[in-house]
Image 1 (cartoon, rainbow, N blue to C red):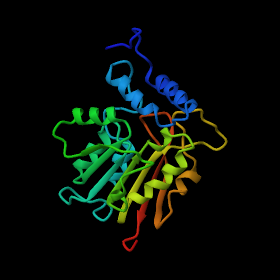
Image 2: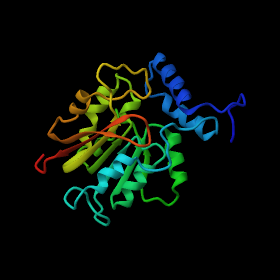
Image 3: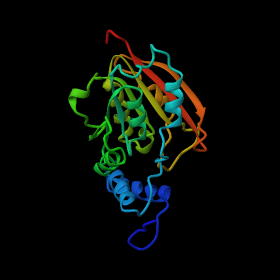
Length: 235
């Protein structure tokens, strides 16, 4: 394993927290993502949310859908994966038959995902959730947000929450997976778990909340939100 410049491999979660808090002090709450991925690419640390497989709750949700809830392989409906990181969720969604676009604010993350999955049908690109391309508005049959919001403090998290629903096409679905903030608990972050009120706030601009579950994830010692939203065909 390659170490850092001082010969030490940095604990991924501790290093992410250090970078995040330094970015907050500097007034750039999203600026730490690129540095984390760059340090990981240099072998100095790891990416704490990279588990080498798609999110287990995303797989659980998709496995429970019938033909009306999930487009099957070959249908070619468009999907968007928000904050895709190293690409495991995006590759999983593409295997379900979606024409998948995946984005991240960190150029090094996008380069790493493209390298990890050579020949992938996923369209990986650098983009900012807070200022996405305007042509993504109401453009995707499935939008997946898996543990990205919890990596953002507030601000700018409230603004990010408002952006999510705009990606969803008429008749489309949004899936949100995040750690749950327990009542009365303050978290120094990252991650900054989401409250139920924050999950509920996503249901705006014609987006309807279909379900919100609290699920015990096996991969991490924390309870998670698994929330589904849908836009009516006529929106």
